[in-house]
Image 1 (spheres, rainbow, N blue to C red):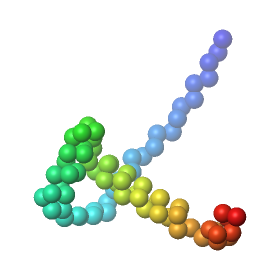
Image 2 (cartoon, rainbow, N blue to C red):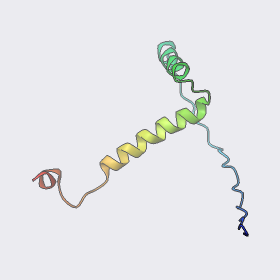
Image 3 (cartoon, one colour):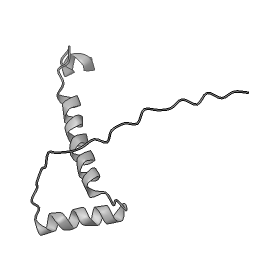
Image 4 (cartoon, helix red, strand yellow):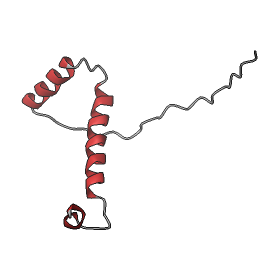
Length: 75
């Protein structure tokens, strides 16, 4: 029996060239460090991106215009 093996095109890795700097107080840094240690998160940069972009996406979904008002939809 013949099996079809297709070669997948390799994706070029995303190169991030924009930098964002954020200053934290000692207490805020301790809170984040404890959280990352508790959940065994080793890739801090990816975690920051996921949290920030997830928050933005969630707000965008809530802010998108709708055809009807919330009152009309709850009837």
